[in-house]
Image 1 (cartoon, rainbow, N blue to C red):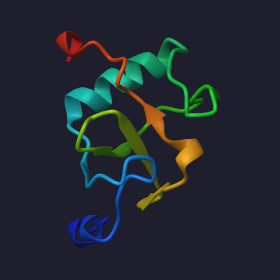
Image 2: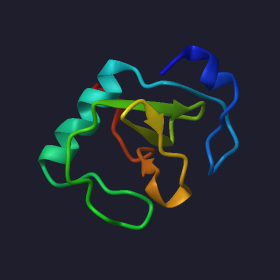
Image 3: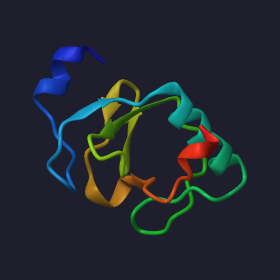
Length: 88
């Protein structure tokens, strides 16, 4: 996904700018996914590891990137504001 796309999209929940998710946060999210503790906004467990994601400015949501396309559906956002930052 080209960086120029990031200037055109925003978080569907907060309206904040999106950036590429730092690897430490993505790795933590995937550990949570492996442990069965990663869910989307609807409470549906994330079944597969996340290869790529975007993150909003307040670091409260991940936007999964599927086949180079950000999934900008509010229900599909992955809330991460409960993550313990000391674990990254």
